[in-house]
Structures are given as C-alpha cells and as structure tokens.
Length: 227
Image 1: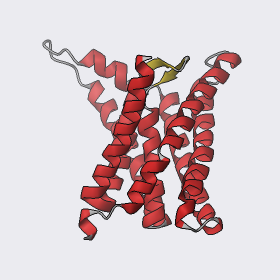
Image 2 (image 1 turned 90 degrees about the horizontal axis):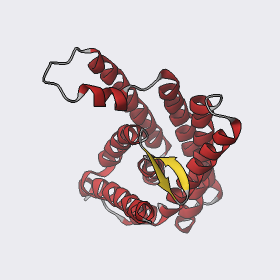
Image 3 (image 1 turned 180 degrees about the horizontal axis):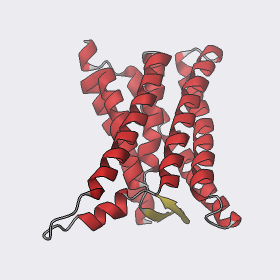
Image 4 (image 1 turned 60 degrees about the horizontal axis):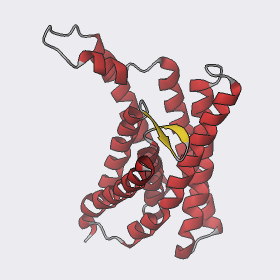
C-alpha cells in the first residue's frame, strides 16, 4: 500500500506546486511548469513501480499536470497561449535530449562516479525518444483543440469540469496509444503490450480526474503579476 498512498500524496503535491507557481508567477509560472514537468516526467519514466496491482512507469502524475497547466492557460488566457505552452514543453524536451546525448559522449575522469548512472537514465534509445515527442505533440495539441471546442458547447464557468476532463481523458488516450505503440509494440508480445497500454492509461485517467478541483482553484486565483 505504500506506493498507492505515497503516489496519491505525490499527485496532490504536484498540483499544489503548479498552483503555487501560478499564484506567484502568473502565466509565466504555467509556462515554466510545463517545461519543468515535461523534462522531469521523461526522466522519471525510466523507473518502473508496482501500484494498484499494476506494473507502471513513474512520471504519469507530472506528465498529467502539464495537461492541467495548458487547460488553465486555455481557460484564462486563450488557445494561443495554450499552444505556446505545448511548443515550449516540446522544445524543452528536445533540448534536454540533445544536451544529454552530447554530455554522455565526454570521456569521464578517473574519479567520476556519475557517468554510468547518466547513461542509464539518459541513454534513451531513439525509438523511445521519438515515441515520447510524437505522443506529446499530438496529444497536447488535441487537448487544446478539444478544450476549445468544448468551451463553445459548454461555455459556463460551472462546466469547466466537462472541458477539463473531456479534453484531457481523450488526449491522454491518444498519448498512451502513440507512445506505447512506437516504443513497445513489437518489442513485447501483444498481450504484454496490451497490459502496458491499459495500466498506463488507467493511471493517467485517475490522475486526470483528480486534477479537476485544482483547475477550479486556479480559476479563482488572481496571480501576483495581475494585481
């Protein structure tokens, strides 16, 4: 039960930190959160855990929080700012991958103790790196598009939960399908691939539903830079 309880706490802490960034730094804080969380989620994904009876990769809660950040941007500032955040997250991920591939090529000193660990974490095979970037771009842009479309159908403030969950749950499904297909389909037997796909989406589904109250809190926040 440790991973389940600790994981729930970690999810809540992620969303609270997002709100703090928004409160003190406004729109810029949300942009920064998307960049930071995209990078950290792709580092954490290298670790696997057992949770709710499933074997899953870490990083799902941080990654899901980027969808909440873009939904808040879309809700309060509009579609263009949400799309800008998506491209910022993509650029941050690309820069991290390129910079770390160069970093790992340097010959370590005899006293070095980190090189092997860096290769373990950042030695991303091209298939996984490509899967992550394609899934990110496709799902985040779909999230922004669906959220914008749902706002026209459900425009009232009280309907934020429909816009938020409708856009995130569908886009997360696409994200999971693209990532697991490119990264793992053919690598594992089909039944194992199905398990990875389902477990990953179930966790993202749970986290996405939990973010809704924090979206309403963000709507009520007046950032320091707008006072």
